[in-house]
Length: 337
Image (cartoon, rainbow, N blue to C red):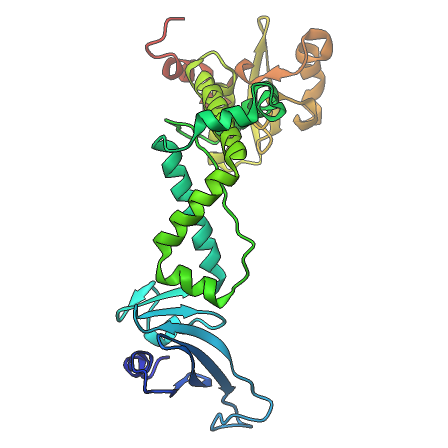
């Protein structure tokens, strides 16, 4: 596709070269440098389609050039805007021929991610003014109370069911900026990203001290709930997670499930995709032919729907997917029952 990527690199690097052209497959690409300041040029690109009506791909009166990128000479940095100019460096990586390339659509996203990561590092290093933030929020904060009573337990259950392994609270700090793509702001960030990230992190942590403190506390509550579930081997969520894992891995639409309560054991066919998504098994997902037997043992008169720890066997065809006795040996290994 490329015809002369070395020449394009030289065009970028040489301040005296103001025009460059290159043909790629069905297009002629014309590049023009427009000075912004002594260290920065705007790179405009005009593309013309090569066709049987225009075999030479010459520009017409209706063709318009657009801003393709910004080139900073002091850093050798090419900043893409509308077009992916990386292709003219024959590069799919972010660094090639000594030139870094960034997409304008990612510019402030990268800035925000960098600031969020810096804030998280400062929190983990104890550099966040937690005592001062706690005084701002107070002991009776409604959001923290709600998190303790309802919200974070549900999040912890979701993390556990997803098979996550957590060794510390996960604090989510999402920094956002309402700055538009102002050229001065863009160049400031491109020329000194670390300084800009640090400066904005300082301002944000002071301005949003109360919010950040709440995020920290909620993350700690969620982590404690997660550890309680993980360490309590008698929590039915352990069975639910394993059953959901094996049925998803099997890729089956329906499975046969053996259920047992009060010495009564039945076998039913149920929807594999729904098995393990709730703490119990609804008769709505059981085959119609098996519902009468199910209700005899697990109807509302007999303690309600079957729980995950009442499943003793799950099979698909002749293949055994789950056996409670075998799973108990793994689950309670080294634990006194």
